[in-house]
Length: 419
Image: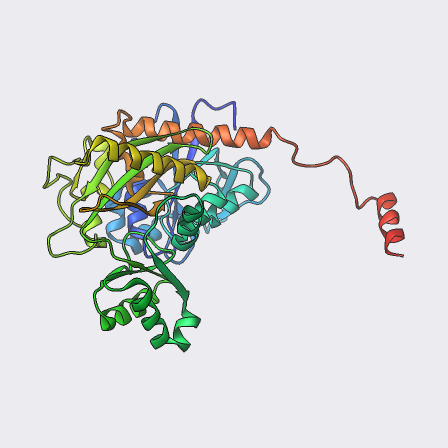
C-alpha cells in the first residue's frame, strides 16, 4: 500500500466479456458513487465487450453507457505494466502527437472487482491480481471459482450437510451423443417439473422451468448456448426464494437481514428482466427496499429495482437457520468481502435448500445491509478493510527463499544427481 498518499486509490473494474456486462456496469457505478471521496480516489477501469481495458472520468457517469460505442471512443485505452508489484500499474495509450508527453501511469492500491460472471467472477481476474500481488476486495481464486460453478458448490454443500435439492449435471459432449438417454435419466431421477441452468452463469440468464419432456429438451438446448456444463434440478413447489448476504472472511463473518424477492404471478422463476428491468425500486409487497439517496441510485438501480420483501416474512427460528447456513456456506467456500447466498424454501414443508452463492452480488447487496445497519459507504469501507487485511497477512508470510538453485554451485549438484 502506498503510504505517502492521503487517499487510497481504488480501481473499480467493471464491464467484461460476459452476458452480464450491463449488470456489472450498473453494480459498479453504484459502488463508485457510494465510495467516500475523502478516503478514496476512485479510478474507473472498464473492460469492453471485446476484452480491451479503458479508463476515463466519463466512465463514472451512468449516462455514458447509453451508447457503448461512444463510451469506448471517448475513453483512454490501457495496458498492464508488468514492472509493478503490490500495485496495479496501468499505462494509458500515448496520444498520436510528436509534441505530447507520454501520459503518467495509473497506479491502483486496491481493486474493487465489479465484474459479473465469466472470467471476472470465476477466479480469473482474482488470479491475475494475485500474480501482481495486488490487494483486492471480495473472494479469492478458490472461493470465486467454487461460487461460480453451481455444480461444484452444491457438491461441497452436500459434504458439509448443507441441504441441496436433488440434481443432475452433464456436459455438452455427453448430451450431444445421448440426448434421449439423458432426458429419460432426468425424468426417472428427478421427475417433473425441473429447473435447467447453465452451471456457470448468473443473473438468471439461460435458466428455464420445464414441466414436460419437450420443454426440458428446449431448455437444455437454450442453456447450452451459454455454457457447456448444465445443471438440472428438481423444482421446489410451492417455491419461496429467500436470500441472505454475508460480510467478512473465512475467520469472521456476519449475516444480513433476509429478503424474499417477489415474482410476478405468471413466472415460475425470477427472470433477468424481473431482476434488472422492472419497477422504480419500490416494493409492491410489504414496503420492500427502495433505493435511498442519490449515491445509491447512480448508475441505475440494478438489483435494487427488484420488488422484494425486507425482512422476509418468515418465523424467527427459520430466519436464524438460514442465516446460520449462509455464514457456514460463505466460510466453507473460503469467501471474503460480501456475497449473497440464495436459498429455496418449500412453502408447505418449510424445507430449506441452498441454491447458489454470488461472490460478486448485484448491487453488492447494499439493499440488504442498509436495513442491517450498514450504509452502502460503510459496506464498501468494510470490504476494502478486509481486502487490505488479507493482503497484509499474505505478505507477512515467507514467500521466497534467499537461495538461488540456478547458481553455478547449485547447478553442479543438480547435474550430479542426474548422473
